[in-house]
Image 1 (cartoon, rainbow over the protein chains, first blue to last red):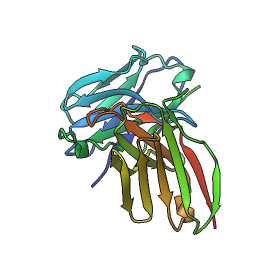
Image 2 (image 1 turned 30 degrees about the horizontal axis):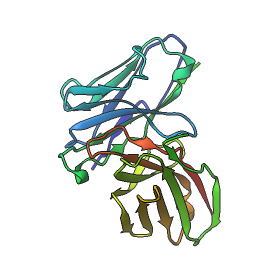
Image 3 (image 1 turned 120 degrees about the vertical axis):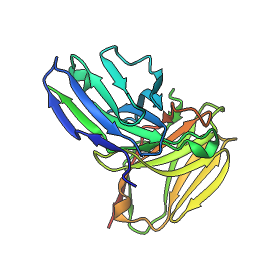
Image 4 (image 1 turned 135 degrees about the horizontal axis):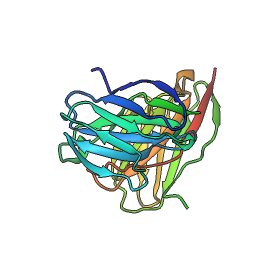
Length: 117
Length: 112
């Protein structure tokens, strides 16, 4: 079991630059989520996919953020024209949704740290 | 008032002690309750997952849910220095609800 894999683990970028993060979920999982977490807070939901379809996007998510999951496997999260307020840990998670209460536990990757200077 | 309240700590206890971590919540629709452990600069790791009220035990960890009081707890027996981490509670109203509502996390320190 390789778990949820994210890269890069750390990214420092200048304000105004674009950055892209990649996530490889647990192989049999059909749902993939992106969250953002800042120090002293729990993760904040950004968006999620079921297979290749993006089913929900947080209203708090700026249009500078875009996510894709082209073949229902790995996903990318791109942030355009980064701002200092984008500095955070970006977490990817996945789950196997089977339509029952026991089938939607969410497993997280180790996160990608973004620092915008 | 936040939907989920969790004391940020830090909570410092000696090795071997029983640790009690708690969250309170306001939304009576929550039915699924989770505890995650998060080490510094790492992603959250799922520890316990409980549906509705009751107790669930897994090794040194016991999760309790009291829906009548809107109160959940995580107990750690025989605490070890390796248990030092931030513990986050999370909950949702439905099994398909990906929008988990999180506590801010309690930082736990186990002193050798």
